[in-house]
Image (cartoon, rainbow over the protein chains, first blue to last red):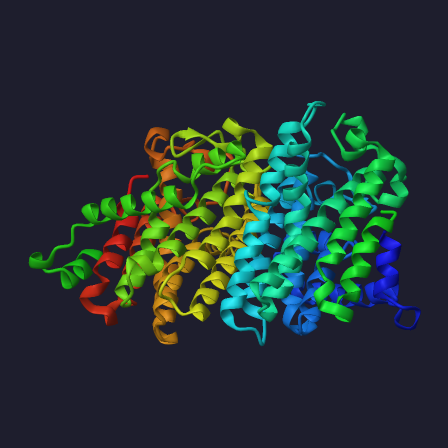
Length: 308
Length: 308
């Protein structure tokens, strides 16, 4: 089904080179992030924030935001502060999730986690600092966008991160630890909040910045919710099938922790096919954007074909 | 000097009843905070956020914000979302500062600290959730204020909280632990960032909401910086002279930790007189606001006369 949709959208003559696109956008994001938080006194906290923020990663969240802004008629410049803020929020959530009091992880993106290098106290503060700066950055650096749209972006960022988003998902995830009988409903709640909410914010904010209609905003949200859930299913699959080297983080953690995952509920094959269905459904939401939707469609398909 | 200024500003006929004023404003803030974060699923995180947010306290920060907004021609309604956000940020900083990896405190405002009740993982997340919601709340709930002013408020909140504010101050404080020879410059850096930056944001945001001139904004900032430093000097004095019951938190902590404090550098008497000078200098900044400055002048004087 995915292949058919792909064929329908991209005739050979207009094939979209996703890898070149991602590479170029990653570089733009790296530069913007590097410039957004330069070194200052007190060095230790800036070093710690930059250590995690500039540790590589796919930069999928900022790229989704930039791509949606462009697809809906905006520019990269309009969206870059929001894109950077999304990556700062994502990074902050990783730093805090890795802490000994939470998931207690030693490696992330192939490097020691923040608290292993800087200590728990600094890691907690680095997360807080990134979070605070994310909002300041959007408020100060967004150019050529009406201020009421910038406020809407800030509201969405806060919501995606807080108890109604990431934080809420992490709480239910922690509560579910060591419970091998949690329901599909609870599992969906966790991932809709831990993963999909921020991905949805990436895409929705890209559209808010250009002032899309509420119908289009709903389409964008459905696209993002679908790829968000597919992303998590693939994450669960990779935790079983990939090596630590491929992942850049500890592999097989879910199994060791006896965690309920999609492959555990559905099996590997069925999980993979559900992820493919979700990606197909996501792409259908973008039909009305025509050719301009190519990058977002290619990114959706990349999500289920990635190996880390 | 303070008494002289007080006399000059408030003839007997127009005496300002600060205690009644504080009590009334505290109640308004309590109600607004209670309504801002109602209980929802997942219960545990909302309970934990509300446990610390509604644990009493002087509500000095939101009251300063409301008072400045009113003094400069605005209303309580205009400033209440910002006032609540300031208290959420303050509460979040207390929750994270109390963690075992930081100051490791068991009591705060006479109650067990957040992590002692909910665990470290939930306490970290409750802080993150309060922080995220603070920004969302300002963006969504501020009424009858031009959007560009709301953005300025958000930028100031982020700055006061991040590595250029609270977080930066806490980092230098942690680095200075157990070093009995830190300089007055470093001590001032710590407190200008840990305490004064957020107090300055309270007062400045109150003025930003009403669109005061940049001269007035500078006056307001100087008022706040002065009361901020005085507040910290008094805090240091109280750590020596007050009991745990009075403070609602562990007393004598600074001495036990061999921390450099103002009384240690200057002695108790000299510290007290410096605090009084700072309060006097703060009040002079408000001269141009005339009678309307009464609440802010009374609050400044309250700071050096408080016993907790």
